[in-house]
Length: 130
Image (cartoon, rainbow, N blue to C red):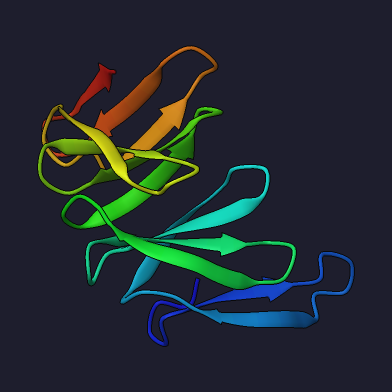
């Protein structure tokens, strides 16, 4: 992401030439791939942007938790960590929020291990299994 200009840059992995510049929300940070789309967390406007990889088109931008940061994908849902004490869960097809989970303080990063989603709670120095 290029958070100053609010874009995601797509490069050719073989020669690193720029292939696309895709405008997203305000202050993009986290990225995750769901098999068809790249999802981007936009810290500056509390949104997620869904980009279709095949043609670099923004499908939509969806509201999410406050200050979204890290993202993970579990095969069905996009999980969003951020700052505060909430982890968000979004349907990969509709982009809509299907739940929030209270965890420790500042769960900036979330990861999926094949069974569970984990949140690393930076300020409380704990890890939460969701």
